[in-house]
Image (cartoon, rainbow, N blue to C red):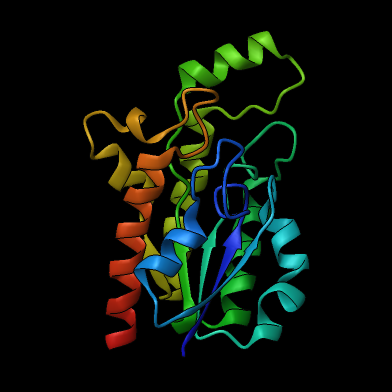
Length: 198
């Protein structure tokens, strides 16, 4: 069976969210029953953290394909890193995994209104501005093109929906809800099957 590793932050991490909703990996397992799928997501992780654990959490498994979904924490005020390091970290991960085995996914858009309200109510909470996040998305897009790895432009795909907020949790405006996970699973499962066929 081909092996898929899902590397990322809280959107990837864990099997269920606190309310019991299935997250990405169990949905991919159902959509891709012929694949062995390993979850290597860590909540709040940025590309620096993911790069530091790439050997133990990804490469040691000898994967056939790796999804990489990182960027929101990189652009945030608490765990953020500068955009040049973000670019370097993504490029380094892709080089080590190899472009043909990497499926880079851009960060999803956020609901800035909800996130700003949460920051006002909880000043110590993590915060990311959508304008800044968009710059990190552009970097991820450029890295995908320059390295010639596989790419899923989740940012544009979600923004292409006239009401993309319906894919996000109303609690924070950042994390995906059930509709969001189903949307992402359908996109990724189709893309993964196409990659396998080629």
